[in-house]
Structure formats: C-alpha cells, structure tokens
Length: 169
Image (tube, rainbow, N blue to C red; front, side, top):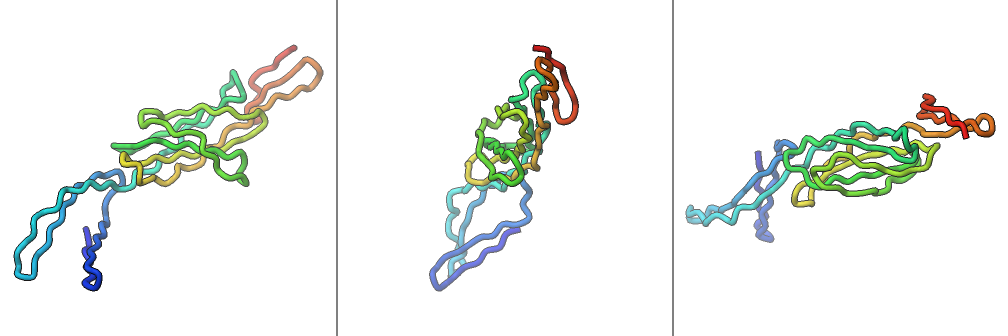
C-alpha cells in the first residue's frame, strides 16, 4: 500500500509506503498524469530497502581455557544483510561501546575483558546500502569469570558459581 500526496503550493510530491515486510528490496518508478490526461514517461527505477530484521543473540560464553575471552554469537534472518555491529557495556549502568563491525558472513566475535566482570553485548545489522539499520538484538550477558585463591598456591577458577578447575601453583 502506498499513499501519494502533492503540495501544489511548492510543487512537491511525497510517497508513503506501508505494510512492507522486513528485509525486502523493492524497485519503484513514477510517472504523472498531465492536466490534459496524458501520462509522462517513467522515471528511472529506484531501488528501496525495508529495515533489516534485528539479529538474534545466541551464546555469550567465556572460554574456559582463558577467562579473559568472551565468545559472542548471533543469527541474522536477513536475506541480504549488510555489516554487523557489535557493542558492549560492562554493567547495566554503563553506556554502550562500539567494539567492531564485521562482514555479513561473520556471526561470531571474541572479546577480551577482565576476569571478575560480567559484560553485556548487543548486535545490529544494516542493509546493503548501509543507510537503514535494524533494531538492536536482545542483550546477551556473559558469565562472571573469576579466580579465587583460598590458600596460597591453590586457586579455583569459576564461571559464575560453577567451579571449572583447581590450579596448584
């Protein structure tokens, strides 16, 4: 469905397209009807894109082999996604920080953070023409990776409240 409005005072015409699905590409052309009933020629075809669907956040997990590394994964339903933009905040009170933008074929990112933190991540994508951005994904939260030393030389490594290993030094 589309609506055409013409402002005779300043000779401008605007078009409003509605009921278009996410992730669609359309080509449109225009022509006008003259006062005598004749039609003008068609304009060159324009390509328009609707907003991409928001990515779906997948797993957000610390690597058990290195607690400073967090793997973030997401999925995109877009048939023609643009780049993906990953953001992080270290706590809900913090502002979001841009981490990276990656190619459409990439759906994972590894971040480096301090142990004892619980960072949050979100992702969005854009269309091929890079002008239309999706909404942000839901927020994915990492486990807290921590190392506790109970007695000198004995350390226990935790993901959240789960002990994953004991280290003797």
